[in-house]
Amino acid sequence: MHDRSLLRRAGRHLWIGFEDQSLTPPLRERLSDLQPGGIVLFRRNIRDLVQTRSLIADLRDLLGEELVVAVDQEGGLVARFHEGVTMFPGNMALGAAAFREPSLGEHLGEEQGYWSAVELRDLGVTVNLAPVMDLATEGGNPSAGIRSFGEPGELASSLGAALTRGTLRGGVHPCLKHFPGLGDATVDSHLDLPAIAGGDRTRHLDPFRAALRARAPLVMTSHVIYRDLDPDLPATLSPRIVQGLLRGELGFDGVVMTDDLEMGAMAKNFGYPRIVPEAILAGHDVLCLCHREDLQRLAHASLMTALRDRSPVGVMLERSEPRLERLNPLRPVAAPDSRRALAVAEAIAGRAITVVRDDHQLLPLKPTSKTLLVMPTLRGETGVEDPLRGEEDGSELERALAPTRAERIPTDPDEAAISAVLERARDFDVVLVALTGARFLSGQARLATRLVTEHPRVLVLPIRNPFDLEMLPPDSRYSAVVSFGFRAAQLRALAKVVSGQVQSYGRLPITLKSRLP
Image (tube, rainbow, N blue to C red):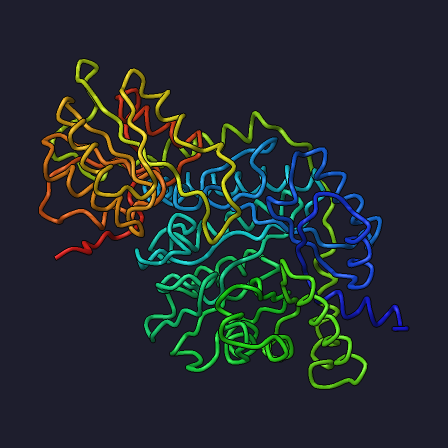
C-alpha cells in the first residue's frame, strides 16, 4: 500500500487527459490512483456546457478544489469549446488588426483575453493554454500559421502581453507557448522532432519577455531542438534552455510545463523511462500526458520512486512544489456577457480582413458579374486539434456572397476534379477560389495555380492560412483577400469586404515568399 500523501505529491506534477465525458467508474479508479494535479480537456470530453460544468465539478469533488482544469482555447484554429462560448478569431487576425493600428489591437487583445477567461472561469476552467507566442517566420511551419500573431517580434510582444493581462483580469491563468519559440520549425512536433539551426534568437524571445513582464504565471516548452542553444536535446529535456535560459537569463520563477509528452517528437525519439526524469531535471514542474493511461501510470510511478528515494529528480520535485501553489484557482470576477464578447470578436474579425493585391481591380465585386465560388472542404483533422465537427464548413461564406454560384470540391483535388473546375470556370466572369491548406496540399496548390494562369479574373481567398499564397506563380496576376481564419464571424467579414459593404482595414503581418521558381 502506497502512502497516500506520496501518491498525491507525485500526482501534482502530472497533468493528464482522458477520453470520457463523465466520471465513469474506470476513470474514477484511474484518477484516484494517479491523483493528478491537473486535467487537460479536449473536444472529446465536451458535449455541451451543462455536461462540461458537471464533469469539472465531479473532478473537483474527487481530486480537490485546487485541481487545475486546463484547456486550449486559443481562438481561431484551436478551440476546444465551439458552442455556448464566444468563438474569437485566432492570433493572426488580431495581429493583422494591430499591425494597422497598434493601440486598438492591444485594446482588443486585452478584451479578448478578459471575456474568454470570464467564460472559461464560469465553467470551472482555471488555466487557458494560450497565448501562442511563436513568430510566423516560416510559411512551411505546419504548427504555427494563423496561431501566431505574425512575424514582427514587437507585434507578438504587445499582443501577447495584452492577452496575458486580460486573461488574468478575467480570473484564469494564461500559459505562454511554445518556449523558446518554434516559429522557424518546418516539421510538426506532433509527428516528429523538429530541429532549428542557429539564428537571431532574440526576436523569438522578446515576446516571452514581454508577456512575463505582464506576470504570466505559466510557460510551456516545445519539443524542438535549437542547435544554437542545445545541439543535442529538445527544450523538453534541456537544462540549458529551461534552467539556464528561462529561469536564469529571463528570471522566470513560475510554473514550467512540458507540451504533451505523447507527441511524435518525443515518442519516436526518446523512451519514456528517460523522458520523465530528464524533463524534471531540465527544470519542468509539470509533465503533460494527455492520452494513454499506461504512460500516465509509468510517469506517476517514476515520480513516486524519485520522491521516496530523494534522488536528484526527487529533490527537483520538492523544490518545485511551492511554485505549483501559484496556480490555485483564481476567483471568478464577472458573469459572462455574450453580447459584449461577440462585439469584441466581430471587431477583430472585421478589422483583420486584408486586401493583399487586386491586380485585376475586381474589388468590390460587381453585382452584375457572373461569379463562381470554388470551395474546398476544410481539412477534417489537424495535428493541433481534434477532428472538426463540421460547424465551419464554409457555408457562411456561401450565404454571405449569395447569389454567387458555389462549387464544392475535395480538400486535396485530383487532376480530374481540377479539370472539371477549370471547365466550369469558363462560363463565369469572375472566379473566387477559397484555399484551405494549399501550402501543404499539392492538389489545392495546382488548382489555384491553374486558375490564376488560365482564367483572366480570379480572386483568391485563403481562409485558413495566408501562407497558401506562397504557392502561386510569382509572375501571375490575380486578386487576393485574406481573412486569417474560417470562423463564422471571419467569413461574414470577408464577404463584406469582397462585396464592397465595408473597406479593408487589416495589414498583412507576415512576409510572403514565392516557393516556385
